[in-house]
Image 1 (tube, rainbow, N blue to C red):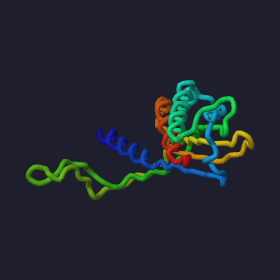
Image 2: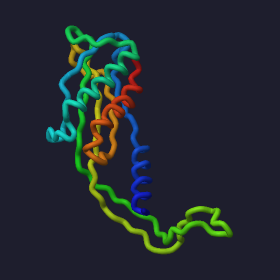
Image 3: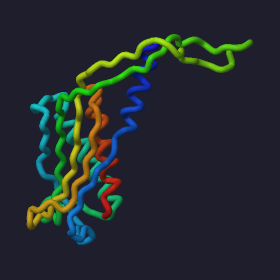
Image 4: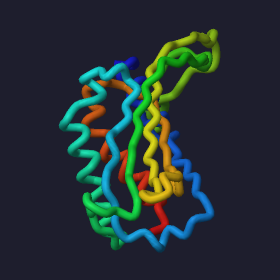
Length: 181
């Protein structure tokens, strides 16, 4: 039970650590009124758990919806800008230190009203763990000059390849919230 609670708390903590990074050129983004998609670039060894048609369709549907809400229209024949997205998965290591404690025990006092309490002695544990780190990048390229005019990215630990199909659209939506169009 303690492991489940710890794992849940750890997952919530890491989920909150994602930040969207944006790079923008000096180009006037207001001049772009239409878009089309480039082929996706997925650096996950073409692993079908990370790269599949369902994930591609979900991501493109989110992009379509987000850009439509910003006043842009999809035009495959003569777009002003091209949308590309890239997903990279790499193995990384991190050092994690658990605090020293004993317990936990349930409350104290007459009715145990203070809830769970950690102990105050013992030895902490430091370990190195390996994890999968995923980076999602959304690029907007001028269709005529082929120059990058806007880039948004987000980096997060990949807890399970099976949830990538569901998470990619949510991450794309977070990135496109930062698009100023």
